[in-house]
Length: 161
Image (cartoon, rainbow, N blue to C red; front, side, top):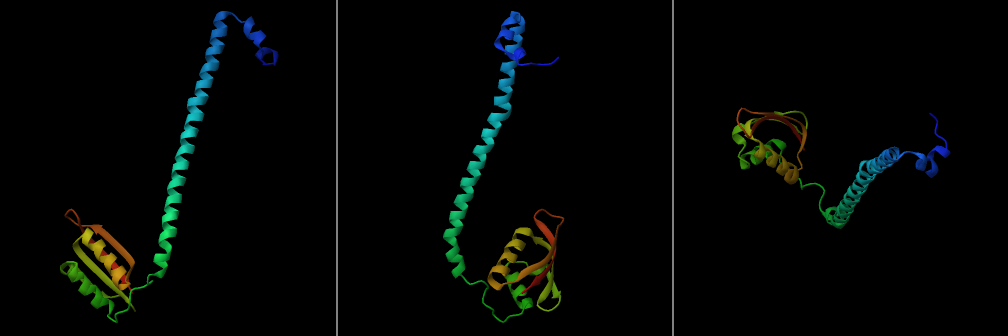
């Protein structure tokens, strides 16, 4: 069956029986509904979502540009106190309540290998954050595994200053 221009005309539609005409018009209506609900509405939603994300990104950029001068004027690294990394780690671990689960040994120049057994995860993360922020110590490598109790971890860290 080949379709020609004449086969798609209104005259050819009028030549069909009433039942065939209803069938053709129903198929056209179904195709139009599939186009609207299957393509146009999802596309519109996608575009609206992209516009919302773009507005959020613009708000984030505006905030970042407002904070940039403040960050640029703050010191990049904490002031050096002259204390060794071993002393800093030991003192700060006691302050964080982690001294009982901590063992440490030198791991090369300016580095310290630290092991914590059954340490509270939240305390560990807060302690590492304070070490980085207040003392400029960074985590060179870390292995953290779940301990036998909820919220407790075993950790092996290499810290560097």
